[in-house]
Length: 350
Image 1 (cartoon, rainbow, N blue to C red):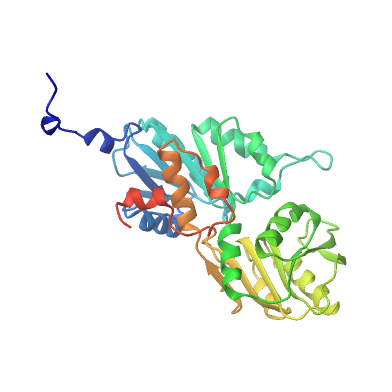
Image 2: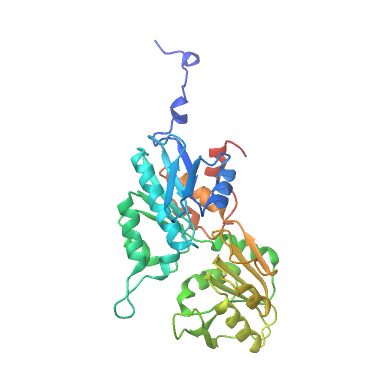
């Protein structure tokens, strides 16, 4: 006797039950704005927490929501004050682990100590390795970060590291401007691989600066440019800038060699005190950066524009939460900051 299919009921409640625990996103002192923006993209509220700094500088963190059995993400950049923010991140990881979170992912938009990736002179510390050891020791299960100065730092960790790039967002911004006769310029060969990807996505040739740095004073000297910029519009690309010196030196060198309009973009704009005046006096027409860094030593120069990478982080967080691949976010042929289908389905909206 056949079964009447009209009597079969499908209970899809199991699809709504997350086997990895409820998703909760928290933000530390240096991640409040980006944390809220990420939650806004996901249609959820930033989870409640508090940070107290006592008179002698002692940092105290407290989780104000139940995280037992939850999948927790803590957004905390390691920018100024670098050491305070780094130690606070460790305390957050420890607090979540002691509160029995299922998984704790450290979302580090800007990892300042990524610059200390090697022992290139006697009797110095490999600072990035020390930081990686501390994050692991505190109990982090995973790290999500963006545009590490040295991608090989991922190998310093024994836990998974998801390394995002701001490039798709920056490329989409400049594609929309439709700049004619464009040349992509890297200040040095260190950013060469990414510069070639920029050039490929922008359908533009790539040139390189020959830069030297004689000390630890953040002053760079541009010796030469390898490639043709005369009569071209130039887009200078780099992963980060602290004082703006390298960007400005490269812009001046391009202008001396006959470049027309000069643009620049960086993933992380630190911009120490005095950088705004330096950028204003440079030939740079527009400098685009992302919102990975919240602290400002001084107001940005008028030519600076900030674009958000919140949706890119939001999409990565959903992929990690669902135990799905994050590598699809590296499909540079598609716009980087559009809302992905998985993000739409999480919000339940089109």
